[in-house]
Image: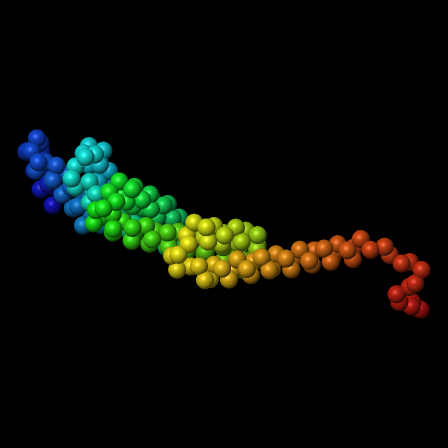
Length: 193
């Protein structure tokens, strides 16, 4: 179907059909799950037609191209960041459109995914007793990804990380005080034969 829209665009370059064919090309790529190509086509449409009445739809679809390429939580989340940026751009430019409403929902989803990835890394550090690194990750979630469903467990891990950091510091100070205590050489600790 990409070819059909391409032919329509070439045969009627100056008509409104050519503009609709551009969206059709991008939608065809999207339907075929060729999200990188669809994203390029939507981006080109945005650049060529910045005032078109279908721009909110195109911007939403561009965000969905990135969203549909998001990988698992233990992988790079650059597509989630790109999707978040596109949906935020959509909601800022077209605050009253129905696609803006859908974009708000997707912003929440992107933030949840990004928060879950941060949590995954924070939990990794926590389980390896790297409490300072874990605490930084958990605090970032609390600050940047609040109200996406992670607040309770993040709160627990923040307080637990802080508690364990205090314990480690106390152990360190206790160990240092024993090492720095003067030795009493007058009284032997063991009687040797």
